[in-house]
Length: 99
Image (cartoon, rainbow, N blue to C red; front, side):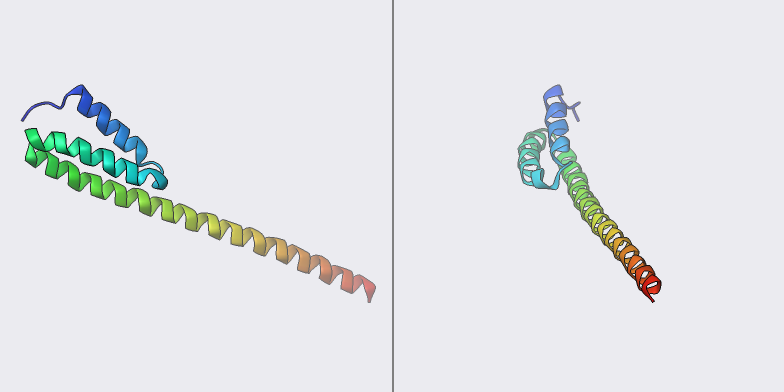
């Protein structure tokens, strides 16, 4: 087994950078496939291992993005509920004062 060239390292770093945003996963997968083709020629076992790790990385990034979006929705809902509760309390106070 040979040591990966600097070009391979740079290609992999580029692929990893592209995985940070879900919207760039398609491009990341395309670049990774190109990268993997070069690796397969020299070491099919290393290519297979890298592919497994890559698939797990993509799944983890998508999952993290999903849960981040869910958290944002939950935060927005909680904020809206607090705003509504505050309005209801103010309305209740006004009604009590008017009585």
